[in-house]
Image 1: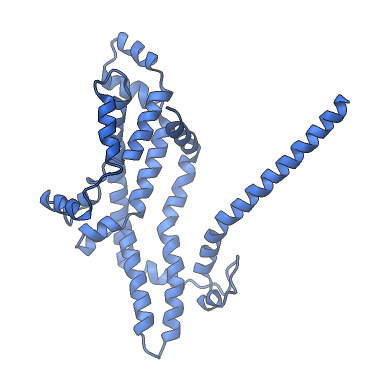
Image 2 (image 1 turned 135 degrees about the horizontal axis):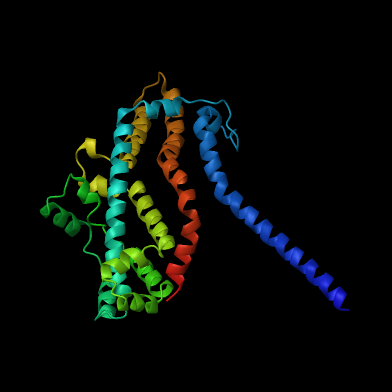
Length: 298
């Protein structure tokens, strides 16, 4: 009787595992197929893409879209600017978030509950675009890189996640013992807290870096000088110009212009997302652990 139950249980587990794997496979296909299609379409003959002949693999391989984009000097200027904005902005974001989250995680901070309430309110209440623009203008940051970095130096959600991680994953008794041994607050932060916080630091690094890399609206509002445009704004301009040329190109070569603009659309997506896709595997191992602990505990 017990042997039959064991066999039945094993059979049930196999069925369950098969269902789980089937659902996971469907989800993977749903997530990956759009990306594979975009990659294939960017390398394919745009006429075949518009005719619906491209499903998975490229057809009529063509590099015209990438040649058109990468021979544009503005692309490299945009890449340089975006790399600078992303690196400088992420470093400032991480430093500011740590310096705010660590004190708020300590139970001996007077009034930390009231401070957290005020900080949380900023997620729901905002001055709006016009007051923010006027403030940035009064601070003399319009048409500078600081207009893209300083107003978002700390993201409230990221601050709460990091504070929760410090509070729930690093025992307060450990910090008290370090203080009893003569450890200062700064040494405690750099020698104990941060080395134990690699998962949440990886999460913050990815969140902030991707946010800076994909950002285009603040640059659209605050940046006037084309030499300071980030990559996303440059790609937006290239896409708009190619589509405008397709519409106004006249009867001669009109079809070629339309096809090229369609191909450029897919190539622009690849050019703008490739660095993020390359970076993600290096922080993925810490990312899952950090975001789960930081957002669920406490």
